[in-house]
Image 1 (cartoon, rainbow, N blue to C red):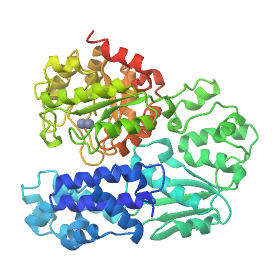
Image 2 (image 1 turned 180 degrees about the horizontal axis):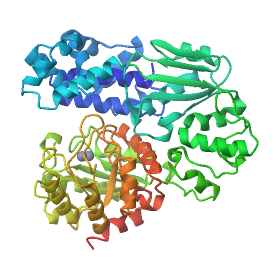
Image 3 (image 1 turned 30 degrees about the vertical axis):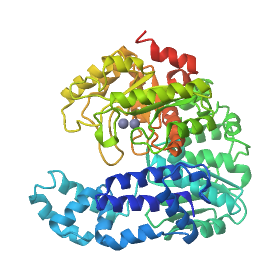
Image 4 (image 1 turned 60 degrees about the vertical axis):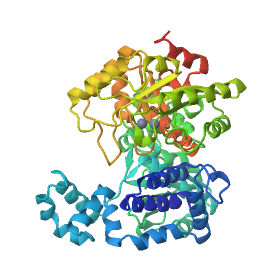
Amino acid sequence: MTNWEIYLNLMDVRTMLLLKKERSLASLYEKSAYSVAAMDETVKDKERLTFLPEQVIFDIEEMLVSGNSFSFKKKLEEEIPKGLRMIATLPGIKPDSALKLYNLLGVDSISDLRRNLNAIRYRNDFGIRFEEQVRRSLLLYEKDYKELTLFEGFSYGNSVKRLLLENGLKQVEIAGSVRRGKETVKNINFVVSGERALEIIKRSVSYKRIEKEKQNFIALKDSRNIRLMFLIVPEKYFYSALVYYTGSRLHVSKLREIAKAKGFSISKNGYVLVESKSEEEFYSLLGLQYIPPEVREGEEEIELAERNAIPELVEQSDIKGDLHIHSNFSDGTNSIFEIVEESIFRNYEYVAITDHSGSLKIANGLSEERLLKEMEIIDRINKEGEINLLKGSEVEILKDGSLDFTSDVLERLDVVLVAMHTGFEESAASNNVRVERALSNKNTNILAHPTGRLISMRSGFSLDMNRVFSIAKKNKVALEVNVFPKRMDLSASLVKQARRAGVEFFSIGTDSHNVGHMNFMQYGVKILRRAWLTPENVINTFDFKELKGFLCTKTH
Ligand SMILES: [Zn+2]
Ligand SMILES: [Zn+2]
């Protein structure tokens, strides 16, 4: 069983729990699912899962034995009508809305939903845009449409890659838009080489139908309508094919022109017939500097590579610490000690504990008293000197733009993240004022998840981002790239825009709610690379002294 299959099973349970209105248990399953999906190795037993809640570990062990389902999931499936479950998984329909359709209109199948479109229009329980949303969802459903987030694309892709390598293929790499780091993807592309590749792929990957099959290519559609495409190539052309299949289309077509001018020929499949042992060598054979996949968009990268002018983009190995982590003081599941242990394992120089502040009741936000207690624990751990723990907080920006702790308390913190978790219905004018006031507070260091959007669920605050950028720049506030899978906020394009507007500092925050989430860091690096960022603009690459310097300049 792959990590991806475990992830999907846990997410199914999450959806069913939401249909039962068991929100906190649903969130526990969601957080656990993300941790499994982010793991670098295939889960074979509970050994590396001990940080997860016992109930979830139990479910996963049962899955590993049965190879698929588990009793808790089966029990929920028996309880909740199939039609309702199905509606809850339609693209763009939230479990809450599915439940409303079921309870108010008795809708319990897709055809029922279609018949009730008019009734939805004339009931004001659903809001004015809802009918439109349902029509769009039905259309997407009919087209077998499925879109994955970057996080999902990577975890699924890595699961398939590990499986194929375990089953005997010699080389497998994820290509396509997943490798370039696009934030949503419609299919996952792979380049593979090795004997009997077609046979191994068909035997290893589970799918519902073969969409296309040739001697050196196969496209499979899985049971959830996700398309997996494999280009099978001879080993000597692996890297050339990897460049070709990674794209983008525009980038590749420019490369082809250069290759032709140099006298190379092109294979029937589209890649340049040039042997190489790495992508670096491939580019250098074309007379170009290596171009990282994240910036192969056919913009100016080839011209820059010709002049050897591609900058050294930020890399995972530059990262010295995580700056957004929740412990079990607020809504995280692990203790500060467990976070310390994981951070040492990751070779981090520092990590910031940033639990929620008091007014975010739903996330068990900390009162001043509890925060002070947490700070004491951190001081004690710091005395042992194994790692630098930063005393932090994810402080609510209140309605008027003031912060949820007094400046006395804020001044005692090492790092102050400020964030909005409410106000999605407010106007841009009032949100702008709110953010402006919060960023002007001399204690503010980082604006967490600046837009508030949740991928394919919620579009974020009405906010004039250019104004946010100029206030951040003026007040030396870092903008966060929050890499909790459904957030990815800021996006690469907004980071680019912020950079153009003169914002100098960005931070990556995993927003970890268990230590498994600390593995999300890699997606933040990907997003920042896509925005062409180099280490000096990313505060997680600063060593501890530099970081302290950055955090202190405003208050001292
Ligand atoms: Zn938050
Ligand atoms: Zn957070």
